[in-house]
Image 1: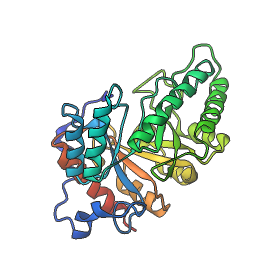
Image 2: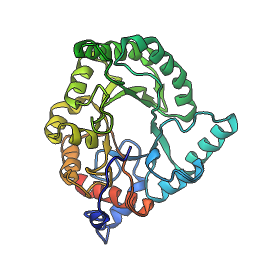
Image 3: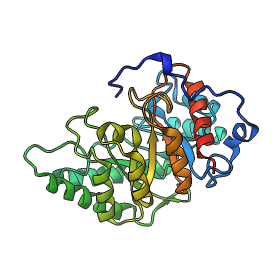
Image 4: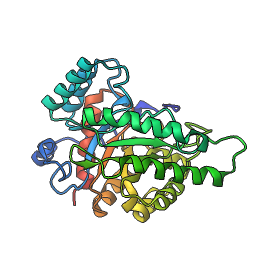
Length: 305
């Protein structure tokens, strides 16, 4: 996924601030539903594919916890797990006080009407797994542009596919939270064939689906590459945002290493009273625990209102 290179010389920009205050250091103990720290309405998570890939799953969770996070996002790491694997993973996350907030990795997408039934089968298949690991949200992709198919047909397919999928999760809760379907945008540099490169179009899809359990995964990294103008679209569509993903441009590295003004983004999330999750999905340039910890502290400082 990392299709760019970036100089290590600015890797620590805005991340190495010393002397963190005691309230930030204690923020990991903030109660569920009250944000990551006092005065910060949103919570923080780590998309696990970006870090500690060579370690066993339980050790990966330990490292995330060491960095101060209590939420983790998955991308199908559980595929092929045995019953004992699920038991060990659940035991470890409970020991560490970690919850799985989102998962991904469905085989089919909503943008091709010919895949509709296969997508619905994917959702039916993943729901029992989500219940097993107490994970209440799943990412849905638009899929690639279908050759010869008009864009308005694919746009409508995204709407109708999400409406059909929403019927499968209607009223369902996992770990006390409504099950949510999250539509994600991807930039055209990472995948030139992907349909939904515009978060503005994504929000229009979500509006037309008009279901409280269907929301947009606003990935700032992808949108900066695709179209920019991140904060205005956040302000206009905050009620339809179910999750945001955090990484800087270029290189998909930590917030503060590139061109996105994440201090203003975290501040705006707080001003808008965004009380959902901001997930770190960046590729560390150095020690992953230290960079995750620094990114967390950066978000807390900038997001405190």
